[in-house]
Image (cartoon, rainbow, N blue to C red; front, side, top):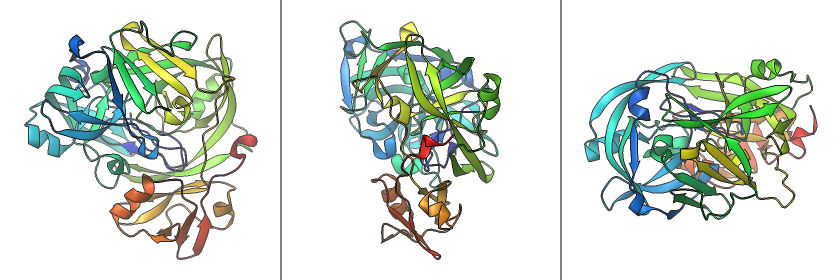
Length: 406
């Protein structure tokens, strides 16, 4: 799934991924059962190409790796455990990938049908993966994930037959045949994972929350923290306090935009031998399963041992604590023609000064933002400080102590 955001706005891609929680949320929508067999099939890794270490960049807290399709030419693509391989229409045309099926993808406001295409070979660094099904097309220009890459994503069905270790600090992905001899496994927190059929074998976990457990999709295609539906929190005895910190979000989906609120609940997550304090967003946009994104995962070196159905979390902090996700006062989205306010932290300086979701943004940090290229530069750049609309200039910087209430 592709889900976005720590800042407040969630974007569900109508192509094939998940959902997050920043004032800028970005992730992809999960395909349903139609066409899922094709997406789950194959993904044969050449053992002679292992082990390999692949560098990545991290625009807007997304993982981007150079990816090839059997030729010397490479294309930057997101690495997303929450979705199957997704390729743009341009790549389908360039490499003549055949259409072998169709797949329905749930998206905000409706369902989108995508083509399932056959891809003979996917290469990353020296790694070679054969016979992979991909989804097409990729997102359109109105979706901020198109600023991350115009090419698509490398999904779980490419990854599922090997061990993938993501070191967010070093910005490397190491792929091996087994966990033997690699760091960050011994002494790490082991978490059982289960492959979800229908989205390319994406990994799901059960975290102890409240008086029971909740299921979550592990989604490196999301820049957010942890989200789940309010009714699921209620089932495990976790109530959302009336004074809970809230992010207002605008969701871009198949049937237009939808505004909604994400309240956050400070919880203790039980991982067996380890307990972690971390806020969970109560979001109705997450259907059927919660979502764990890079804001949480980047607090660890994460090892996905797909063959043995285990994920290892090795905390980067010396004391094992996990930092809360940073929350900007406001964030900017693109509606296809105009920059708009897409996320707003309730109680922030921007909110108190009268900034509203959907307000047209003319400048960010004093720089005009009237074109998609200017928006993309903002979306993939550093944390913004100010947003200007016709009503004035507003403080969009990070909110101190956002999670201290509730």
